[in-house]
Every structure is written in C-alpha cells, then in structure tokens.
Image (cartoon, rainbow, N blue to C red):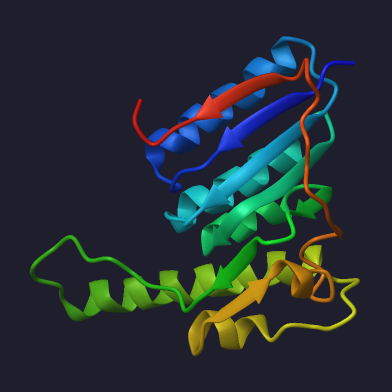
Length: 186
C-alpha cells in the first residue's frame, strides 16, 4: 500500500482550498487507502477552514495529519479533522482572537450587527469543533478565552496534554510515497 502525502504549506484561501480538495480527491481516485496531510499554515478564511474540516470528515479513507512547523488560526480546525494527529518535535500551534476584515468603506448598523453575529457564530463553531476533537484531553484549554481575548502559543510537547496532537514524532516519508502538493500560487 503506497503512502499518499498531501503537502499544504500555505494560507487557507479560495485557491488553496480548491487545490487541496482536488489533490485529496486525486489521491483517492488513484487508489489511496489513507491520506497523510503534511501541514504548516498561518490559517486564513474562516468559512473555507470550516469547509475543509467538513470535507476531510466526509472522505471514505482515514486521514492523518502532521504539524510540520506551525499551524495557526483556522489551520488548527483543518488539522483537528484528522483522526490521527502528529506533531514534529519543534512545531507549534497558535490560537488567537478571531478577526473580521472589512471590504466596504461605509457600513450601516444592520451590516455591523450581521458581521458581529457571524463573527460570534464562527467563534462558537470553532470552539465546538475544538472541544469535540480534544474531548479526551488531559488538560482542557479555555478555547473561548483564546479565541476572544488572549492568544495562546502551544508548543508541540504541550499539544499532547491539550488533546490537539496524539503523539510527537519526526515523520519520515516512505521512499516510494506519492507526494501531492498545494501551493499558494497556482
């Protein structure tokens, strides 16, 4: 059984999300019986991060993920979708308060309320996923506080107790592994 590794070392945006989906489906079409995600991302779009989480959960093969350096923000939601989660010894995670980027120069009260409602809903969805995927953690992280008030850097060794990673390991890919990449530029 050939190892299929999908490398995602870029932000989560429309283009990278589509290319990631395509690489996963390509691997499955080629006969992959499992996927190994090699991740390092600063995160990005909340709605696309939640879409990636749901997409990974829908795949008919087991998904493992490796924190290959830094996984931040919405990248953590992506990482938590994997049923087996590894972190290389010197990697880290970053959870920070959620933000909203405004594209309009003028916004009325109704639109501001909509943005606030959406931001609060994103925070709740992130927290629910985090709590679900780390339910067996030795030490519970106050995820709401991290997402709304104060950032938290979590080194790889601490991610085990927080339930984020299942084990620390310097991953070495099989010599005959099939490598599929996603890059920020198409």
